[in-house]
Image (cartoon, rainbow, N blue to C red; front, side):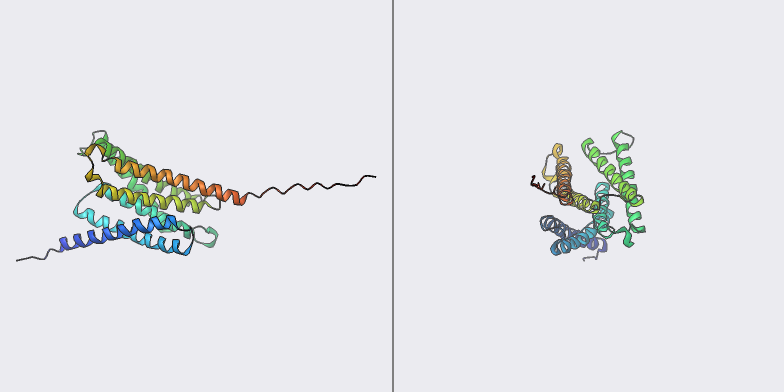
Length: 250
């Protein structure tokens, strides 16, 4: 006689919808980066990306209850925070209009900061042998870097909330791009960790975190610098041509 297992149903439903939402994230994120920035399609895809990522992060929290995984939990917090702050900065770009950081921005920034600090501390305890861990040293080192990055990301945003940047009116653009590229990079890392790592020999598993991370960071820096140069060219007035006026003498 078959018995109804509610926990199995919840897990299976969450896993299937998590996979679907993750596929939507990977597709919409790629299209949003390719399409014209600020256009209608870009904005609509961005909203789909945001809510899909929100569900992916929330469902990760549910799945971790069934199969504890500190790494994936921290990665979910970091990825969603970058998605959240990358979206929120668009609403905060006009501080004089009363759209500055709210209590939610402060709370999310503090959550990311504390999560990164606690996780980095836990990993370092394992790295130096003060806490038992079956994970290889390469995994512990990489996850400690992710923990410190989460701490740094949240702390820098809290600093920005307290002291909004002055002088560069396009700072929100760079923040948006950097956060969204970081969010998408995290999604790629989560995907490769789940689907590619198991196909590799143990000594190469660390590459599924390092390679996407390096490419994502490098790509984000190059992309942001491209737009900085582009905006600087627009702001810099072209020198007026010199006009020589000849006067008749005598």
